[in-house]
Image 1 (cartoon, rainbow, N blue to C red):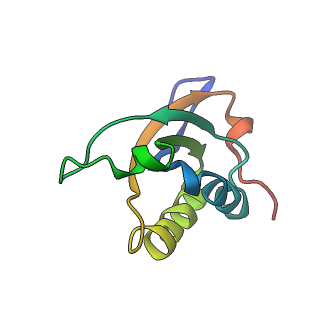
Image 2 (image 1 turned 120 degrees about the vertical axis):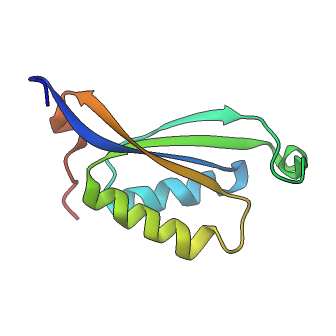
Image 3 (image 1 turned 30 degrees about the vertical axis):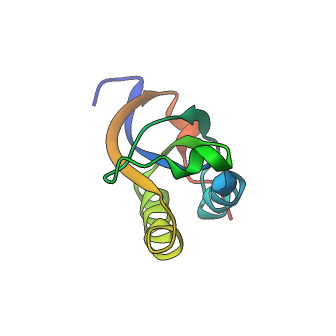
Length: 106
């Protein structure tokens, strides 16, 4: 690790816009302190874009420590993957200002 940088997890979630606020509330409950949300477009395995009729997709990116990332991933597996067209991936990243990504007290 280089001085001034620290390793954290980046979870990227792509979901229907209608789920956005619910997911953001869940991220906060899991200990995330912030996130970035952008509009997203694309096609899935069946090349369908059903969510276009309901407002499109949101891409949510959240940078968190390993503990929070595990809580978020478990929540996605339990609450979203079985019933919704939600995609997610996890990457290791290095960030500046590590104090911004410490676990939020619950």
